[in-house]
Length: 253
Image (cartoon, rainbow, N blue to C red; front, side, top):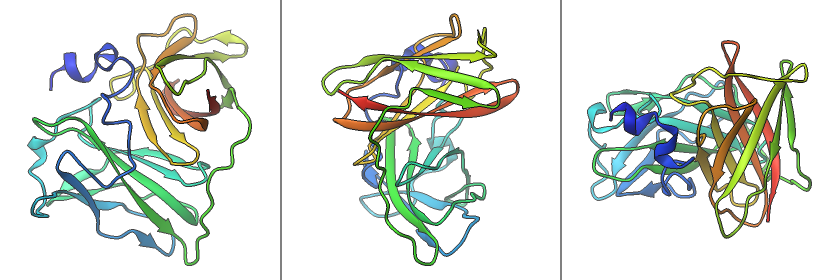
């Protein structure tokens, strides 16, 4: 797809269609997510999976059947069930199998979401659960209070706004260093930032992109309606040549 459709933050009104807000099922849009392995005794873990046609189980298409979304043909989000670990990687396709870089995952249960778009179909986010370790324990997130400030490598980010159960809401993230608002961020995957959220109970996945550029250190996102309760938010922003990950917890009203 051309830049007007892949890299413009206004194109998706802050998030990638409605279908990217999912990750709860392994199939959608007639496509299925199938892993070669879903259990590993130890790290590092190399994710290997195929996208198949659910009608016949055959591997779907070729690389040119996938469309670039924010400069990549495949985005994969990996989150631990207790929401303590998060990874955003971009596997490459080889002989019908998407292969990720090795990931140093700790023992436990993880949700892996493949977020992608193919020709003539809506963007889709398919999710599968995997386990790491010889005897992992299932631990879900226990979030009971908001965390609205996150600090990494001398940078501090604060968030203003709340999500709602019934309507879209704006979340504003202000980035500062040494108490001074950051004047600019570096493009990362064709955007000024990437925001992913997970509901703490269902692990509902939402991937959002900024509404516009940065002003007075602030980047805004339009967050779609979500479930009641708490969600953890993972914000990726490229600053000083490095992608930095900031985490927050918000209560959905």
